[in-house]
Length: 127
Image (cartoon, rainbow, N blue to C red; front, side, top):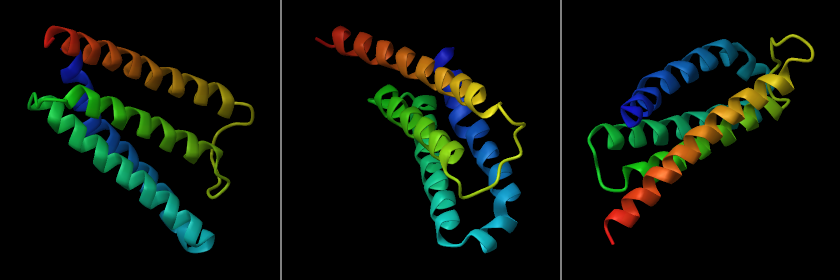
């Protein structure tokens, strides 16, 4: 059940999130230049890796949990990069960036911990 949830998050929720993010910063890309394009490209690539990991989980592919763990770590890094990069202005209220970032990184850390446990259980069962 939980791997199915993560699969749906990676294949549906993350792409929708990046779509909303990209549409909100699209006009700023012209003003911000190359760094903005690079940041958006990195986020799109990370989302693509996440979709691949989600599909691997959904289809029960060997190594899918390890791939999903890698994708979640990359997604967390992308979120951190987006939050800390001064490339785009944000619309968060003053003082809310750090708590929101803490909540998001805790969320991703929980998925990484869960996937680490799944990978270790799978490895111990195949020995």
